[in-house]
Image (cartoon, rainbow, N blue to C red; front, top):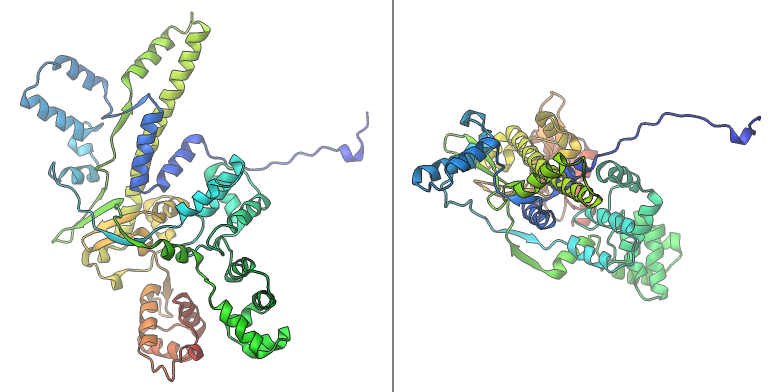
Length: 492
């Protein structure tokens, strides 16, 4: 039978990248800071009876346990402590450096926790508001990911297409930009007004929409919607001419617009109040007098994990008797196998997380060694995610997840890992300069200028050039905006 032209079938090859459940688990654990990681482990211990606290036992350990079960003298206790520290390593030569470094601490010594002032995060507050919405499980997942993707000021600067790709690759969730847009619209109704906006214009418009209807409200909306560029530049004449309004109406609208908050996330932090919270560092970096640097994970509250022996023995017994099993026995075998596999997968993911964290932090130390030895911010060299990825042998997305919410305790204080990342600027003769250093000098120039005659961007470029930072005027303008420094005429 001949096929209709509309029924012609075609074949096409398409490459799709998917992550296994084990990979997804490893990614999720990697993102967690120390405190949340500890909570996640305890939750898994409660949920999976095949998992328990303790050092993994080998057959050699079992033999020693049978022989010395009733012997409780001090030498046996010493051997036990040695086995506990060696773990799965046969000799001390096989132990990674970080294991030896951690064990160099005395038994009762604890790494000092340094109080670190930080504003209360608005993420949990937004999640509470999300929980109050009537959403499908899929929409709730999208909502949590969108909230986690907001910047500290409450704006969403990643485009929805990129977020859809991230969800597919890292979370195994297939979605569309339309579905993300729908959930984002819900989040944009949360308090404070302006949360979830994708740019300053949308942020201000969201806040204006919450106001009571009035003629002045419409003028405010028109200024932001139709004259946003002129509003940013405070170009009064163009706005009045473009909208056909009088000066009094303009002044009244501007007075209201200046009350809006361009950083709603920061506003929420201020509303709740700033607390002196104790940040628990994920890493401990100790610099000795001779300049040697020791790295360890802050794992003192993280229990070791192993498979429950009773579960593994029951699984072995059911497996051996598989031939003549009843339906109930087969169901029991399936249950045992699922729990043991899940427990072993979790243990492997925890080990992978620890090693990935150490590899990433060690690469940061290697790249920023002068800072860790001296503690001088001026010694920080230009460094981006790609630099750390290349040195550690990890993927850029992995490095990004490690550095996103982790802290390191050093001899000079506690720092977010994001602190060590900064762009670089290369001069004509090939010298690489730190953008952080250039911004510091730029801010000093503005602070010390004559406020009656502030420097223009051209003049700032000349001053920086004289100080050994030959950057273009447009680059000066870019850095000035990033430092929230207004143009010269607004600094008078």
